[in-house]
Length: 184
Picture: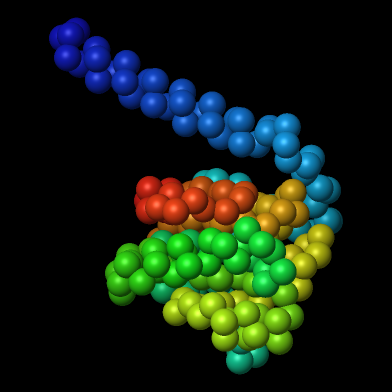
């Protein structure tokens, strides 16, 4: 085997091991609460899986199928609430990222675990241009269907154009982090 090829293979193996170690660590971080039991009839989707269909109202009360938003484009689904400090802090970063995507990049979707009134009040102060869907927080809310078994916010999922979950993130994005994280 050529020396250059060995180096490339070694680098690829190291990268794969690093990604695996990160995923293992994120699932077992000691500072996070243990996963909550998933209610019967609810399947918490994991990377590589298609989440079960999720239909939620938008701010006008229209039911929207999450998978039908921006066909052929990846979705970055950010689960948040107006009362969640870290959620509020990352909203301008998500809005910046969404604007930079244009009409053919990753489509950002906000999924608010909140009341319509609280979301409208919040968006009047911190407007965003991406779609917002609504759900009520609880043991079987949409974030659980998207894999959030710890019940913490913010929670973000990257879904590819075929609507399979690619990545999941618990916690807020630091400035600029979403740019590299959301590459499908």
